[in-house]
Amino acid sequence: MRCAIRISVLHCVVVACATAVEPAHDKRSYSWANPVPEEKLREMSTDRPDTTESPFTVDPGHVQLEMDFGSYTRDDSGGDRVTEWEAAPFNLRFGISSGFEAGFFIVPFRLEEEESRENPGVRRSGIGDVTLRAKWNFFGNDEGETALGLIADVKLPTASDDMDNGKLEGAIALPVAFALPGGWDGAAMTLIEAVYTDGREYRPVWSNTITAGHDLSDNMGAFVELTSSTGNGPHVATFNGGVTRRFGPNLQYDAGVNLGLSNAAADFGVFIGMARRF
Image (cartoon, rainbow, N blue to C red; front, side, top):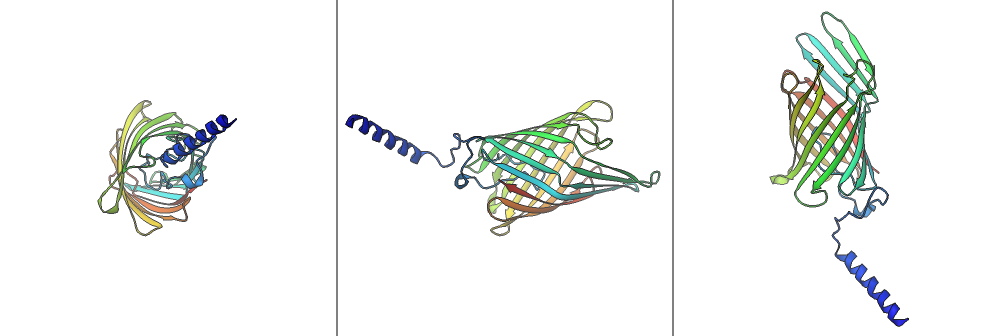
């Protein structure tokens, strides 16, 4: 009996020591069925408001909602004008394991209006496509000054008639995050898409983005971003900027503007949105 008690006590000591020396950032034992406790959650990282996606995944067992309350885009070209409104497009992100998340994008309502000399007004409205996403983090989720991820997207042709091309499309992206001098945070992304064109064929579209952000105060931040896309028609380039405001560790509001730098890009866009972790 005494021997059994000694073995049991020794076992408890070994387990306690192993737990004590286990790195705080080691979350391999957690999963969707075994969520990370609140006190071990990493700082919330979002895939918005910039175009550059983050390499960071949502902690296992937690869900993150990211959405626009609304957005507006306008493009004027040769006397023609195209405007687009979107209401509550959102992304739901599910933390599955320490380095993997799944998610999906939905556009509940989109309104497009075209005005030209030939057609004084063409209006289309309805739901947009649904995009399914898988994201992996290779390193940097919980420590270090750099992080690298991989994103795979599949777009399902669920949009209302005439709202999109009605074809299945996919994309692969490599996002990276890194620290910059002077307290700035940097991120970049390269992305290859398979896009169905008007020529009734799939063509590769190559996009690259780079962004930099800086804290304005303990709860506020700002970012600037450049994007470039080529492969399907003329080159598209934009300059984007915006601000974020945190309310506690699990809630962020944001607003921003997108400005076209090339003729093929939309002239102007504005949005306001939020991110909430559960």
